[in-house]
Length: 251
Image 1: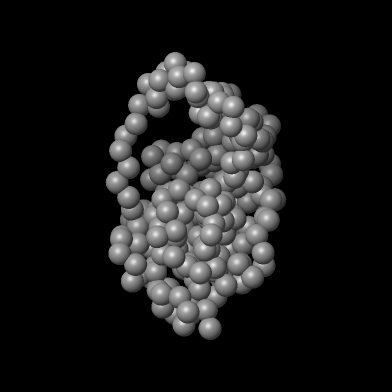
Image 2: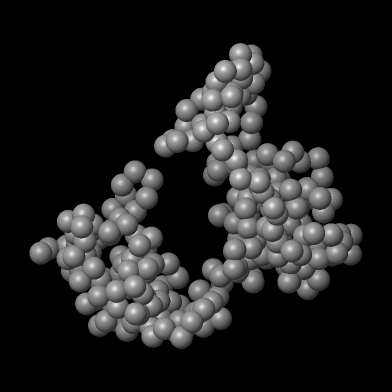
């Protein structure tokens, strides 16, 4: 019934393209302008981020990063049915949360009717991070069953590289190579045996011309692979600030 009541997203102008032209902004200059305005209150956030709020106005913004899910189950069931439909299997939405929310607003889907743009941003976040309704593929937001996460799940079960996501012909490291290369990377790290987790796969490629494939070694995520018992004698993961680092074990 949902599929019959809703148009396919591919029929909504602009949504199949999956991108928006966003102008580059000088955020430092904008911050200075806001700080000079008596009607705007600037609040410092993590790092160099900041929020600009209307002075004297009650703060009722939706936090798009919140893990709280206040939305009715009917909304989620209809969203699952819609994005799981045959007609929407090839939809490609913009990869940014805000741009994706705008695209969904433009589609006039009845189960999202009346939702503010802030709520739509939150719904996109939950649909990706918790509900497994949406996922990512090649920088776009797609129905979950078409996403990189599902491809990796299937590949990890088979213990093979995610061939459909592979962009080149670089050789894939086997377990022995993965252990030795990781040990070498940590030993030569300028930060005394510490490497940021996002750098590990890049260093495999640049230093050893090998791809570290987590799925070939039975895992969906690189963080899970490096916590595998087969690497316990080489490294451990630690959370430092807002990101993970790989720490050398022993000498």
